[in-house]
Image 1 (cartoon, rainbow, N blue to C red):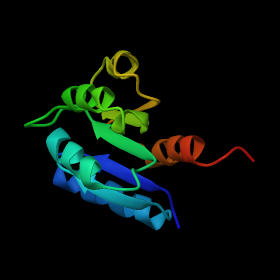
Image 2 (cartoon, helix red, strand yellow):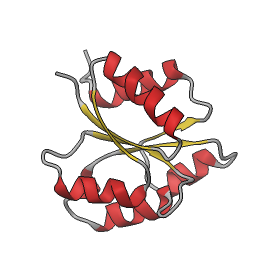
Image 3 (tube, rainbow, N blue to C red):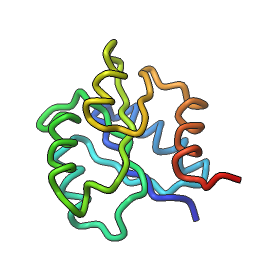
Length: 124
C-alpha cells in the first residue's frame, strides 16, 4: 500500500497526468482543484495524507492562502507540503510558505518522484 498524497492542482490535464503517474508508482492519491477544496477534504479525511503537492496559482483559494489556513490549523499543520510552480521566485516562495520542497513546472517526473521518495520513504 502506497503513501497517501493530496495533489492540489487546478489544471485538469496536469492533475490527472500526475495522479495517474503517482498511482502507477504505488501511491494512493486524492485530488483537489483548489485550496478551498483541499482544506474541505483534509478536514473530513482521516488519516491525513503524508504529503501535499500544492500548486501556487489557483482560482478561489491560492496555494499561499491554503498554506496560511493549513498552518493555522493545529491538526492539519503537521502535513508537509511540496510546492509546484512555474514562478521564477518559486524557491523563495517555498521558503516563505515553509514548504519541505519545491518542484518547477513544467514538472520533471523523475524530479517529482525523487522528492516524494526522499520525503516519504525511510532511509535505507
